[in-house]
Length: 263
Image (tube, rainbow, N blue to C red; front, side, top):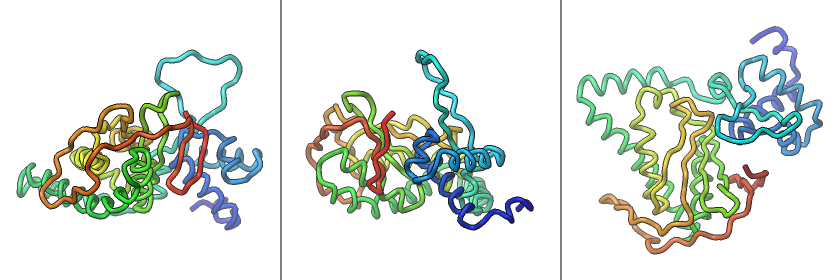
């Protein structure tokens, strides 16, 4: 810790950490949104943003998709860097990576696949009751899944896609196993399949933190008939039947119940 950081009051440091958490959870996010959510003045938010930028923990997001630039100076939106996410992550990654390397060397690639499946089987066991309690509405089930993921440290939110609300994006701003998954993408692939089984529709992983994205993004279609996802032996199949996509507005809903502006 630098001399300057040691002299930062505790309330100042905790507020700065909360700014970082919101950037991780909701990025790309503007300074205006941060000020609104945290009930801070624009000057205070700019001060925290400047510190986090200087520390290399957040950067300005540069959109890469097609689109027409608006005239005038566009509002800056911020995303967390690997260094910023590391501040909120555990430090067991090296040990876990070496352990999986050893597993592959001793037992082969199939053993790694089996480990990834065993990990998400436990995830499904814990999450399924929460998702089933949300009923047959697919958006409600996605929100319930986001809440379960957030409780496990994944900083998950949902975002409506398109003016007609034809899909949702399940976004995970933090991944406790990101560093490990960079070397073992099987963990991400198994997790995606688990989401499909929990929600009862085919979902698509658009981006992952492990592959360099600023957030893990899973696309969940709402305007198609639910697919029949095979249920593995031992999985609970309650709640089968048609899921109902409900009307969606152009908002982003967090598991905690907060609502922010949509994309």
